[in-house]
Length: 326
Length: 219
Image (cartoon, rainbow over all chains, first blue to last red; front, side, top):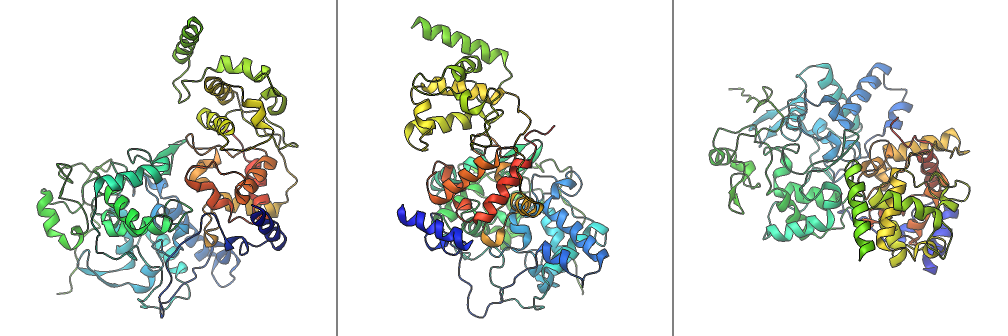
């Protein structure tokens, strides 16, 4: 106690967190970057405002994209049909390492994507998020809204090398793709102890004054069965490095896996790629669904065996279409 | 026994009369008389927290009016159980029963929010820093925005994330420092400890001033 007090007094004099972080009560435990990796420092909105190299018109477009990213719910019923914002998964304005920073999409695309088996543009990648994670439909390709989203991504990538793929803190996969032995009830216990206070006993999230505060983790207002987050490994890595909020790395790897499995063993809106038969859909997209519980039986119930698209009045957005150069 | 029955009856009637809220167990009318009387061994609540529940900015006594009843009840229960330590509060609530604490909490939660009297002398620069912390956070230092948990306008969410908007900056600062130093530890899952201990003293001043300057109600 005495040492703590002294430390905080000392820190007070130095106006520094570095001294305090010598022995924090809740240490931040993020993975180390590997040798040879490119580690990006994305610009901040202050950098944008202070820059005299960016045309004022472009600043407006970037800020528009940022506003769409932070408050995607302004497009509820237009582009978004669930309770998510872009920032719900891409924390820290899409800048944050280990929180699927979005700028790599601007430096690594166009490229072939396994998920849809063709070469994707940055716009198509953004469209994927709207179609699956937001259970919606993207702004039209080439539209003002899409341009704003693209501008925000590209500005965040300022200074990053093109087509450098060895990126530190990218995506949600640092725990690897090999699942440990998973147990529904163990996951439920982790959920009850660590997650329910914000996301609710039934994963329903919490709202205040008509706004989403804590997003629902399953059910009609959550991401659909085609979202990357339904992959247990993706959710496990997201949770490990970002949840509970403000406590990155506080759960053990196993706790993160178990709770990711528990959350992704609950029902959610149908995969937009649904063929009319869940087992057939699982089989058709097995390179994706081998990592999900979709089309498998959990607690005696076949997951995804329904035609429920949540509040979205259609199954598949037109923007999701194959592309070939044959 | 008879008394318990009549109390139940009153509680039942009150619950019927009031719009359903989470603090159905607390009786605000009982609470109204308790806050003027106190627990018998200390000062009555209203002596420090004001007749309108508005608190006292100069002394750092928080506004209680309009705060969530379950949150308020938990804080008083925590004082009595030693989970939250405060030399002034403890002796003033230790003779209240659990039911009385819930009555008091129900009373304060239903009081109209008084006009904020906590204008601070913080400058524009501090307020801007506070606004950034409250709404955008300081992610490079692992500090999420206050509003991610305390909700739109930082007006509070549910029974675990109290309203901060319009609270006295003196109280917000004092509490952030208490978490930071390890003096206060009754936050669920150390969610507040984690954030508070990463804040610099300058950030604490700024965010307390900004939150205090916000309107406590949506109107």
